[in-house]
Image 1 (cartoon, helix red, strand yellow):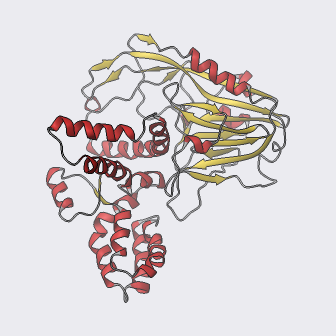
Image 2 (spheres, rainbow, N blue to C red):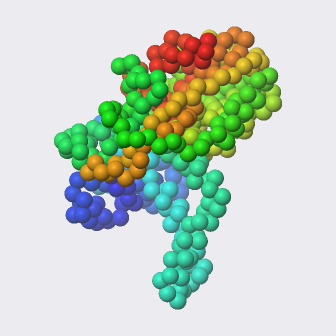
Image 3 (cartoon, rainbow, N blue to C red):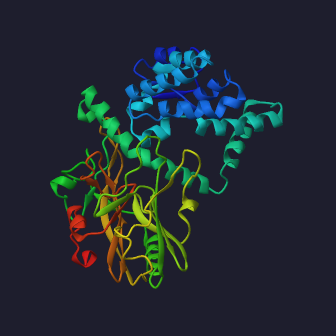
Length: 418
């Protein structure tokens, strides 16, 4: 998929080079182009009228919503209607995906912000004596965007929710090509000391089993592990006052669903507000791959916020909520669950090994105890649409309220379940 700004002739050029590529027009550019044909006093109303078209759940629904726009504004601004009709074939491809993938492919804003900074640096310099000087100017401009690396980490968190849905779509596309398995990139082995999970909760599709090469000892994690356990222990004695779930931006018409009864889906993480300050429970790649982690600050400090970025989705005060019995209570205990994973060996598409297998310990879940009972936080990805199969570890957070659900997910450590 190639996301572009609607430059005339670009889709044809892309088709010449990559015949099977899907061309997606940037929705933001399409909106801006629409405003060129309308009076400024009508911009807000036109944007509001077009929103149901580009947030529709399907292409048919988008066509129906656009027909409503045409009926309301076509007489006054026929050029806008023609613009969208001419771009329709390149506008609709992203509507075939879910909200998390749409967040990534609907706009070119991310790369354009980088290009704008490069253009500014080049204009300020004026001219360059040679190519090396120009390259150095561009390099310094890019590095100045994020000198500490914090922004890169937040951007990674912001984009990660789309990775799993994209992987599912990619596996479907790969299956249609009917390539021999040896010609496809081989996923990393993912085997735990607890063995294979139940049939309803297997590891990620494509994870390898069978003979393993020698497993190297993973890089040391004593420092991060000690800090993790200390931060978790520091929660004891705090009083819980509020709970907030965060998810990626929802571009669809339906509200984001996070309540599944005995577990809640907090995709980006959970902020627990306590009498001693906020606490964030989220997933990170500190221990590689994803694990659950605790931070003693706001969740906004770990996310890239914006109009299309993550947002709070719940829960709202409700006496029937599982959290109702814990609000106002002291945290009386904590526990954590570590797993040893064997990763690799890394292979090329032709099957040749490029990196040795290695073992790594990571925290896949933690437990916070209240007087009314425990609550578990798991770094896991439930598979849509049934949300019954669970991939562990995963780059999402599941909040679990029952022993039965935790056992169904494959956890059998009695000390952690109590």
